[in-house]
Length: 334
Image (cartoon, rainbow, N blue to C red; front, top):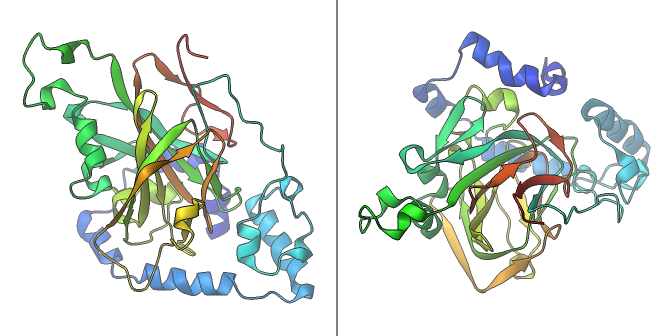
C-alpha cells in the first residue's frame, strides 16, 4: 500500500481526492496533532545517522534507490558502499556540472522536485494552493507580525489606509506570485537560490511534522501552516522575495548553508512552539544556483515574490523539474 502510493503518478495522486471529495475535518486534523510526529521523526533521524555495516549497505541502499527511483550516477559518491549512514546517502551531493544553471530567464527552479501549485493572488484572497484545489491562508503561514507579510499587503492599493482614487497605487504594474515544490524521498535533497536576491530575515516556526506527500496534501488543509518551517525573506530587483522550507515527517530536519547559521537546525526537543526570528543586518547575498540549505529527507518549498505583471511561469502543475532549469520569465527581460 505504502509503496503503491509513493510510486503512483503525480497526476493520479493530484486528482483522486477531487473525485471522492474527501478531506479531513478540522477536528480530525487537531486529533492527528496528538501523534508525536516530532519525537518519532527524531527517532528516525537518530536511526538514519546510525552506522551501517559494510555488507548491508548495498542491499539496503540499492533497495531504497529502486523503491524511490534515485539516480546515483549524478552523485559525487556513486558507490553505495561508501555511504556509512542513511543520512549521508539522503544528503548526497551532485557531481559538478550535472545541473546547468539557466541564466537566460528571470528565475530558475530551486530544487529537483515536482511542481505542486503556482499562480498569483490578490488582497481579496491572500491564500495559496498547497496543491491543486486545497488552499491555506498566507497570514498564518508567516506567523504573527511578520514584516514581510505586511509589505506584501501594501502592494494592494485597497489594503493601504492612505489609498484614495487617483493615487499612484493605481498605476502599480506588479503582482504577487507563488510556486510550491515537492521534493520526493528519491530526489536530490539540497535546495538552491532561484535568482539573485538578498536574505534579510530568517523566521523559524516549530510545529508538527505531517507528511507532505501529494496524497496527504490533498486531504489535509493547511499542512504548510501546521508543519515546522523556515522562512527566508528579503528582496530582489523586482521587490519582495521569500523562500520557505517546510519540514516533513521522518527526519524533519532542515539545515541552512549560510556561514552565520552553522549551528541552526530544526526539530529540536527544546523548541516546539512560538517562533524565532533572526535578522541579517548586512543581508545574505545569493546568486542563482547558490546552495541555500538541505532537507534530511524529502519535503517541500514555497516561493512568494513580487514581479511585474508580465512575469510568466515556464512550468505547470505536475511538472518534474531539476534545479537550475527555467521556472519563469519576465517579458522583454533576459
